[in-house]
Length: 205
Image 1 (cartoon, rainbow, N blue to C red):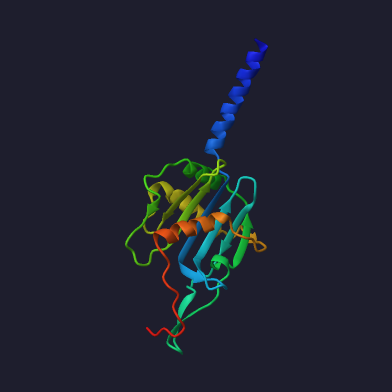
Image 2: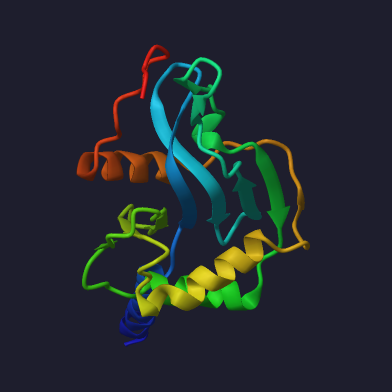
């Protein structure tokens, strides 16, 4: 009888653990970008302006990139030029503390099963935003949308993410490598919408 009680108790603990595992996340990444950049190897990559990485067992990581595009028109030679950009265009790195509202919203959205994972609009000035969740079982959920057409169930999280990134409470950090989830999102996105060919230096508009 005692043995049966121990087994029942063990199964109850296992069931609770599985529920907690299902609802938890291993990591979450938010990125915002506009257009693309090229790296030092002449490969097209995301040109990100904002990056935030959340992991329950690590510190908050934030990075920013310049707003201007890396493809630009040289008015002297009347041709397109390009600067080799740092990885994903990010050149400013920060660290910060988690706020309770941020944690609660990330965990809430992680449990949502969206009707669609791609939300786009026809605005020509549209940027791209990604919510990328990685779960303990290895599953990855990718949600991308334009700032002009944010699904209302994500609006609060989007707002607090931007408030956190733009806050004066974050402090400068040493350079760090972004989470591999960004590469995953880029590969996913480039399959849907392949990047444009690189403009040549001798291109005349």
